[in-house]
Amino acid sequence: MRFDDIVIPDTAPCRGALEAATRYHSPSLLNHSVRAYLWAAAYAGLHEIAFDAELLYVSSMLHDIGLTAEFDSHTVPFEEAGGHVAWAFAAGAGWPVERRVRAAEVIIRHMWDEVPLAEDPEGHLLELSTGMDISGRRTDEIPSELRQEVLARHPRLEIAKEFAACVTDQGTRKPASLAGGFVRSGITDRLANNPLDA
Image 1 (spheres, rainbow, N blue to C red):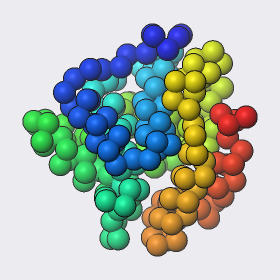
Image 2 (cartoon, rainbow, N blue to C red):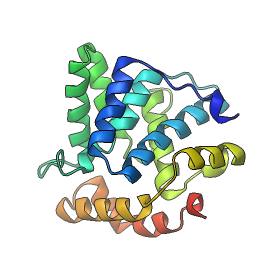
Image 3 (tube, rainbow, N blue to C red):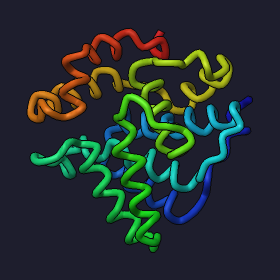
C-alpha cells in the first residue's frame, strides 16, 4: 500500500472539519489529527475493514479539539468535550441526530483501551491509529514505505512535547479522567520513546 491508495474523502463536512482543526490546533496537533486518519484508513485498507470514511475523517480532525484553550472544559474529560464539539459541528453540517451521536461516540471512545471492531469500526480504527501516533503502539503494522511517506507529508514536529504537556495538564486537573490514568501509567515515557520519532 502507498499513500495514494488511502481513501481521503472530499466532502463539505470533511473540508469544514479540516478547516476547524487548522483554525484551533497547533501545527503539531493538526498534523497528528491528519495522521490519525491516515493510519486508520491505511490499516483498514490493509485488513479489509469496511468503514465510513467521512465519519472517520471528521472524527479524526476533531478528536483532540477538547485539548485546545477555546474548547477545554473544566467539568468533563477532553475527549467528552471534543465529542460535544463534534455533535454541534455535525448538526451544522446537516447530519441527522444518529450520525451526530456517532461522531461524538467515535471521539469519546478513542481514549478507550480497546474498541470492539464489530460494534464500532470507526471507533476501533481511531483508537488504534491515535495509539500508533502517540505511543507508537503497533506502528509496525503499517508498511515502512507508507510510514515514511506519511511522516514526510505530515511531520511530527513537536507532537511528543506538546501532547505530553496537554495530557499532563488534563490529568492533573481531572485526575479521575482517562487522561489522569494515562499520566499515572507513564504516557510521557511512551511519547518520548515512540518509534515514529526514531
